[in-house]
Image (cartoon, rainbow, N blue to C red):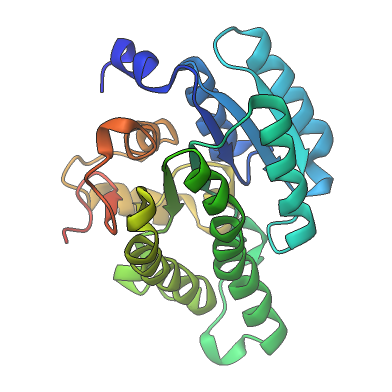
Length: 262
C-alpha cells in the first residue's frame, strides 16, 4: 500500500491499539497517525508516562490525534473506559489492533515441565482472554458504526512450536483459533477479524529472551535472509485495518521474510 493511498484509507478513522506504550505497539500508533487516523493507545498503568509522552509526540508530528488510556486488557471496567474515551474523543471505533501480550515479561526460556500453573495462567489470561475481552468490548461500537476491522497479533511460534515457551506458543495458537471463530461470528456485522503472525523481531524484547546468535540464525533461515525490524510489520497491519481488506477475514498472515510457509 502506497503512502498516499495509506493516507486516503485511514484519514478520519479511529483505531484502538493495545500494548501501545512503546516498542512495536508504539510503531503501529505512529504509522496509523501518520496515515491520518486518530488513535486510542492503551497499555498498563506502569506505562502511563511513556505512553502519554509518545501520544503527545506523535500528535505534534501532524496527522491523526493520539490519546493514551491506561488500561489492563483483562479488565472489563478498563475496557469500558477505553470505549468511552474513543466515543467521547472521536465518536467511533473503526479498527482494533490487539497487540498487548506478555512476551518480554516471560523472563526467560523454560522447559514445559518447569513451568508453574501460575506462569501458565498469567500468559494465557493476558494473551488470549485479554484479546477476547478487547473484541467483546469494541464489537458493539463497530456494529453501530456499520462495521470494522480487528487485527490480532499472533506469532510464527504457533506454527514452529519454538521450545522454551510452551505457554506463549499455546497462547498464540489460541489467538489464531479465536481469530477464526470471531470472524465467523462477527461477519454478519461487517466486522472482519484477521491476524498477523510475526517472525522473530530484532527488538529489545527479543534480545532479552534470545541470544544474538539465535537471532542471527533465525535471519539466515529466511528466504529474504536478514533480521526482521518492527517496521516490517506495519504494512500488513495497516492494510488489514483498512477498508481495502474488506473481503479478507479469518486469516492469519505470516510476516517473517519467508521463514515459515503456510
